[in-house]
Picture 1 (tube, one colour):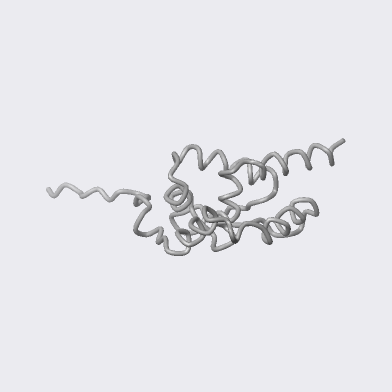
Picture 2: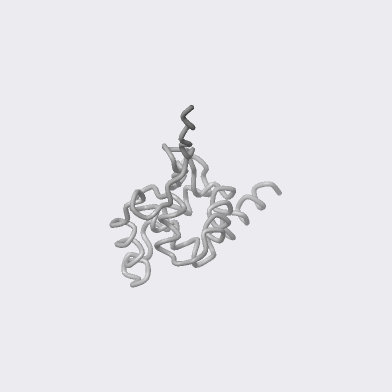
Length: 127
């Protein structure tokens, strides 16, 4: 029964149009939420929710890299998720929307589009 639930979670995650677009963009390069948001043109909270579902299904992985959390396609260790990612890699290259997303993803520079995060320096008052 656990295998059925895992399979259902994977197909449910991969079955949404925006999540499919995210998976195809992540084939181009690892991306942060800001970059994905810029490509899709939807709210950052929606992108984060989509990424959470994809991560929970084992289709994407995340890691902290400097100021950003970077998302990439998951390593191909889990059999069902690996099979889905492999099948998706052969699909969509001729789709105009997927092609436009991938081209935009390749051009994006997170240093230009992401808000600067981190600690804000406070000037000390001089005595």
